[in-house]
Amino acid sequence: MDAVTAVAAAILFLTFAVSFCAKVADFSVFTSSLASFGVSSNLVPLVSALIMIGEAAICVSVVFAPLVVSGIIAICLLFVFTIILVASLARGQSLRCACFGNVGNDPISYRTVARNIGLIAISIWLLTEPRSIFDVVDAMTRAEAIDALLLAVIAVLLLALYLVLQRYGEALKTLDAVGVRSSAYQADLGLPEGSQLPDLTLVDGAGAPIQLRQLVRETGSRSIVLLSETCPHCSEVIPYIADAASTGQVGLVIVSGKTRHLYDQLSRALERGWSLALAPNEDALSAFQAVGYPALIPVGERGEAQGGVVLGLERIRQFLAAG
Image 1 (cartoon, helix red, strand yellow):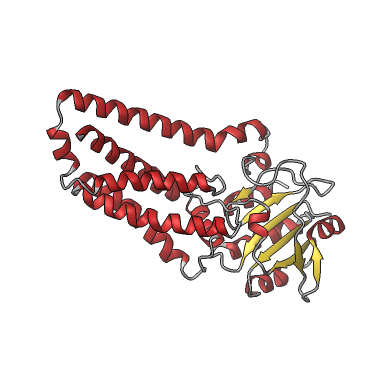
Image 2 (cartoon, rainbow, N blue to C red; image 1 turned 45 degrees about the vertical axis):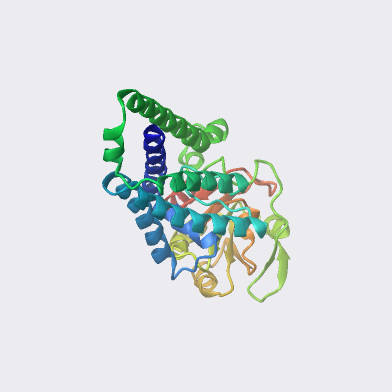
């Protein structure tokens, strides 16, 4: 049983260590995804900090505290995550949780819930263990130690392979091999290449309804930028869009949210080339199958989705600068 306990602790440590490091590596994607789950811009810094502190605490407690401590923290964190996932799925939302930052960002599904339940089961097992991981290892026989080590190595390799394939598998099939513009976006996200744009009903600055597809055809937009009033970083995209407009690029900015602060900033900054529209029901993100704000959707000459999503401030800047 000590071997099982040691492997359970290793899986918990590995899962949350990878999750923590991935969020640090692409922090803007993580914080933007929180906005897509309804976290207000004022609370995004606090919520993101609490999540990352919790994940770090799990990793530290696995190594330096009785395993029951890591089990308690993990159960609390996973329980909250799972409730949020189930609530989002019950509302029919097709969001991407960025659970592993920009490495693992498949749309949430009941498979995501099942994964969390599995981690909760591992955490519950550790609730029965008052010893530290070092005491558990010391009590193991040589055979148990070898079994535990082999199981841990296999688990690490399988998880690493899964994350690599999930992140790069589809992208390698569809990304062009050359050009900053093609390398700036993720082809494994968003609408399939060549598919129609969502049949969204937007509103203009005067509150009049307008269909997304009609607006794209009329304006000849080749990029659709998705922003949100609750996104803490979205206003930083405005200079990039203004620069793109100054070079003759044509696009559309869709701002989701109940207020108009960001929309008004955009309307003052953009004088020509780019159109603005509001999505007051905040359904634009899920309709385009994007992971979070800000995001850019490339559009083809006939108004079809080109496939892929540009995520994050720096990638959007690169994409627009490449023309």
